[in-house]
Image 1 (cartoon, rainbow, N blue to C red):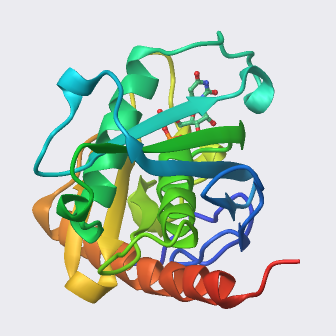
Image 2: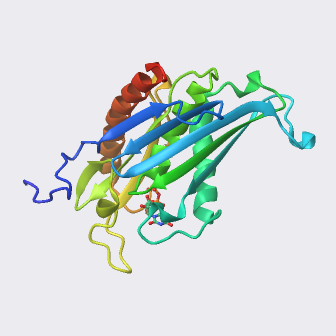
Image 3: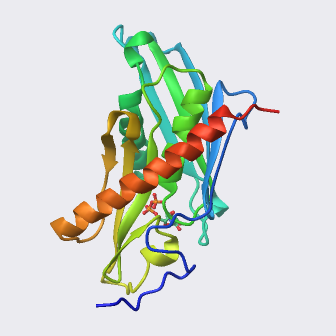
Length: 236
Ligand code: UDP
């Protein structure tokens, strides 16, 4: 049956918002990047590897990868309370886990690699924008990596599988009690053919999930190309 659902911004179901990527945006950092999905904008800055202080936290076998995700208060329509929250702690944790598979942490024992991710404007999928920016910033810092991590949010809205959900789409058909849409942030490493993040908020049938994962992989391949191109561009 032909669908009647139309995306609010008229995109095709498998179409990304406008993507922009740039490296070397923060001079003091060892590596940095900006990644944008439409109105969701993430900045990432990498510091390290450097000696981990206090020393009792050092691991003689590998570096500690420490990700810090946050949104600025006015990045969203309703002012966000400054400072850490359960949400930012969770996103920081899953971001580290999404990035770890491409890093050779055992090459830098006793050190820490700090990755600061700041969302300066939010319109959904900010954790994915953050992972994309962080992955580029780590490469920009010159760290040995087995590949780039690319992330996108896919989901089910009005019965359709969509790529790169906007906030309007995430909220589609919600009232106070019922969540109608399903949001699935996915991070994929094309070089390793590995999914390093998959979260699922909502309900979906197994066959639809399979379709959503395929859509995410396809989008991540495009994102990977954009990230690679940005990394090759010489900084001013
Ligand atoms: N959001 C907000 N206030 C908050 C947290 C989130 O307005 O305190 C919005 C913001 O646009 C964010 C979206 O809700 O991008 C979806 O948030 P979610 O927790 O699903 O994470 P995201 O999709 O950004 O990774």
